[in-house]
Amino acid sequence: MKYLTKLWNQSKVVRYRLDDLTTIKSTFLSVLGSLIITTLLLLPVYLILVQLFMFVELQLLLIILLFILSVIAVFIYEYLMYYIHGLFEPKIKLLNTKSLVIVEGSIMSALLVVVGIIFVLIFLQGA
Image (cartoon, rainbow, N blue to C red):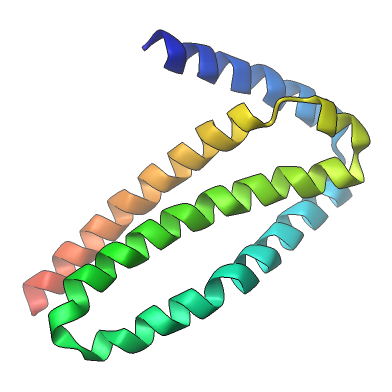
C-alpha cells in the first residue's frame, strides 16, 4: 500500500510539473499522434480478431483477448503520448513520466474493464 501511495504522490508531482511545461498545441498534437500510432499498431490485430467471431466456440476466448488487447492499447497510448510530448518539449524528457503512465494507464484500464464486463454480461444474457 505504501508503494501505491508513493506512486500516486509521485505522479501528482510529475503531473503538476508537466502542466507547467506544456502548451495546448503540444498536448493536442501528442494526443492526436499517439491515437493515430496506437490505432495503426493495433488495428490489424483487432481486424483479425473480429473476423474470428464467426466461430461460435471461440467467442468467449476472443472476448477475453479483446479485453487484454484493449488494456495493452491503453498503456501504449499513454506511453506514446508522453514520448511525443517529450519530442515537442525537451524538458519533459527529464521528468519521470513512467509513474504517470502506470497510474493513468491503470485507472483508464480499470474503467475500460468495468465497462467491458458490463457489455459482456449483457451480451451473454442475450445468447
